[in-house]
Image (cartoon, rainbow, N blue to C red; front, side, top):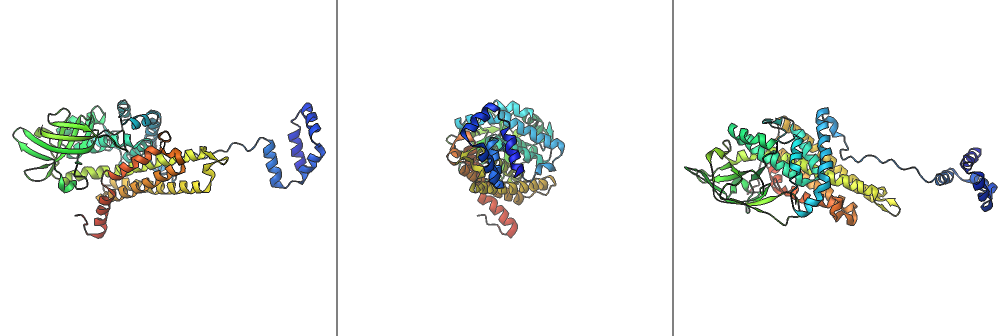
Length: 449
C-alpha cells in the first residue's frame, strides 16, 4: 500500500501549488489517496498509465517478407547488390509506376537508369556481363517484381529471353555485335515465339514459316504477345523451316521491310509492358542474322528453361510486394479504435500469406542452386513455375481481402499486384502445361496430346 501511495504522490507532486489548490476544490484528496490504496494491481497500473498520458508508443517490428532470413546465405557483395537494386526500385520506380500502369505506357526514362545498375545479362560470361550466379539473377528478378512486375517482365525479356537466345544459340560474331550493347541497354531486344493461335503448342505447331532463298530467309506469319516488340531494336523470331520442318531462330532488325508491329491494347495486367502483334510479310532476313546454333525446338527449349526459373522468382517478388504492402496497411488502418492488424482474423490471413511466401522462397533458392550446379532439369523449373504462380495468386487475393475496399484502388499498389499475378500465372507455360512436364517426369508417361 505504501508503495502505491508513494507512486501516486510522485505523480501529484509534479502539479504546482496553484493547480493543487484548484484540484482540492474539486475532489477530496484524502479520499482519492484512500481509493488508490484499494485498487488491485491491474486497476492501479491501468490508472497510472492513464494519468501518465496513456501507453508509450508501440515499437513495431520491421516489415520483412524474408521471414527465414535467406539473404544471410549471400556473400556481402551479393547482399549489397540486392539492397542496391531494392533502393533503386523504391527511389526511381515506385513513385512513377502507377502513373504509367494506368495509362498503358512505358517509362522510357528508366532504361538508362537501369543500365547504370549493371545487372543486365548478369549470369553470362564476357560481353560486359558480370558472370554472377543464377541465384543472384533470381534475387534481382524478385527485387524488381517486388515493386512492379511489368518492369520485371521488361527486364526479363531483355536480359533473359532476348540476350539468352543470342548467348546460347548465336555465333561468335552475333554475340559480339549484340550482347555488349544489350548488356548496357543501349539496344533493346524482344523474343517472338507465341503466335495468335499457338501458345502452349509451340513445340510442334509454329505457323510462322521461314523459306531459304539465294538472298536470305523469307519469314511469313504472325507472332502475338511479344513484350518490348513495339520499340525493340532486335526481335528474336522463331519460325518453322519449310525445307526440313525444324524450328530455327532469326534476328530481325528494327525497320526491316515486311516486319510490322501493332501494339496490343486493353490488357488488364502488366500494362506497362508493351506487347505487340507482329505481322511478317516476305520479311527478308540475311543468313548472317540466322541464329547459327538454333536448329530445332530443343535449342529454343534451352532458352525457355534458362528463363522459366526467373519467372518463378518473379512470382515470388510479386507475392512479396503484395504481402509487405498488405502488412503495412493493416498496421496503419484502424477500425473499432484499433489497428486491424491486432485482430485475429487479419493476423490469420497475414500468417497464411507469409507461410506461402516463405515456402516459395525456399523452393526457388533450391531451384537456383540446382541451376548453378548444372543439375537443373525442365521438370525442376516447371514445378517451381506451377507452385509459385499458384501461391502468388493466393497471396495477392488475401492481400486484397485484408485491405477491404481500398484493395481495389491503384494508389495502394495491391490492386496492381492482383492483376499482374494473372499474367505471370499464364506466360512461360500455363499451369497445365508445366504440370504435364512434371507429370511426365514422375510417372514415365507423357500425357501430352
